[in-house]
Length: 212
Image 1 (cartoon, helix red, strand yellow):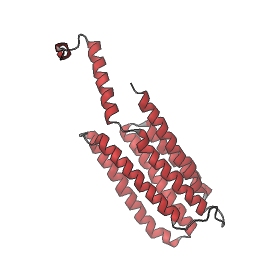
Image 2: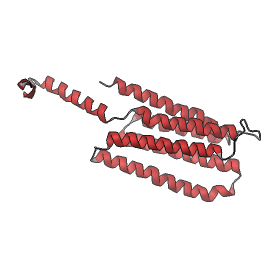
Image 3: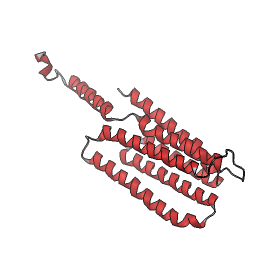
Image 4: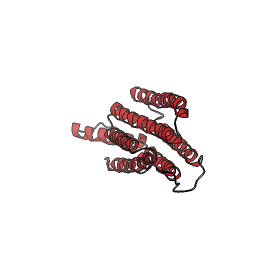
């Protein structure tokens, strides 16, 4: 072992470079692969809402003959899988963190959980009185709108421009789909929403690799 390794840096510039190198190494170690946080959700939206559009398109004719229960089942299964992947990746990366960052993460997770349950409980009491196509539109537009709002809130909490911009994008395409009407909303969310999440994950991963 070289005794010179235990000596302090010779000057302030060297010390700052060492601190920055250690900071960058720590960030790379604890920051999970962005693709694990984005791509599972993008695939879930692309496939799940895509099946909704094929099974329940605008008009009366199915574009693809599928059982009526299949699109919702596939969507929920993919969303659960995406949540599991994100939970494992986040736990491995952030499990050792404490303090304000950990507290923000826990509270943000509680907002997702309680907000979703509260919204869906209310929708369950309303949609049973609506025609099937309008009920489906109300469910999907509300769920996607909640996702957009929480993404923007997360971006504001952590000053994450990418997350905030993705929330804005999801909110805009959700409005466009809702105005387009039943059937079209699923297509817009599948292509623009799911595709947008996949693109956001790819861009975030590229920025991770460019970090010094």
